[in-house]
Amino acid sequence: MDEKPYQLLAHARDPIPAAAGRDLRVDSEYVRCATCSIFVWVEPLAGWREAFPPEQAHALAQRLEIHHTPKHGSWLNIAEIELSALTRQCVDRRISDLDVLNTELTAWQAATNADQRQVDWQFTTEDTRVKLRHLHPNYQARHATNAYVGDWRAAMATRASMLRKVGRETDAQTVEDQAAA
Image (cartoon, rainbow, N blue to C red; front, side, top):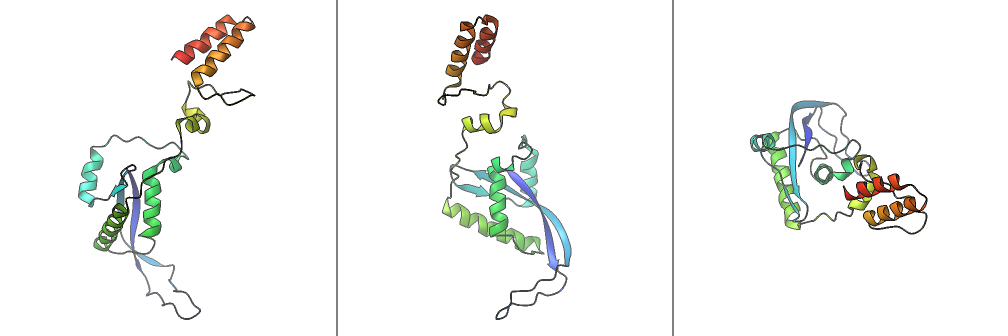
């Protein structure tokens, strides 16, 4: 689930229509009609998205336990990625009326759900341990100069063994304790 603030904007002056060799011209001035929030729920494996009327969205939001995406981690948030797609595909222009906005959102939701576009999440747990190591305090970075060691516990066992060979029993025990935790 994620939400996006949205401004309902009207044109201050009518746009000048496109003509041969000239694009549509829109004045940079606008009239701010209102603000609202667009909430989106995504079920990534089923290819399901849903938008709700404001009252229902607010009622649902009150029942949620919110877990924030890490700072600079919006690329991890599938719902935020869907909001970006919704913005590009549906609300990339001035819309001044809430009913028009709701009609547009409902049409986008129906088309997107009918397509059943699933999320092909390719960021693995192993990737998070490398890319987000500051969020994994118990994870020890692998400093092996040889081949990649896939199993962290096996790597820790190897490290403990090497520490024992050089007489560092206490450090070896600490590594084993961390691996067991």
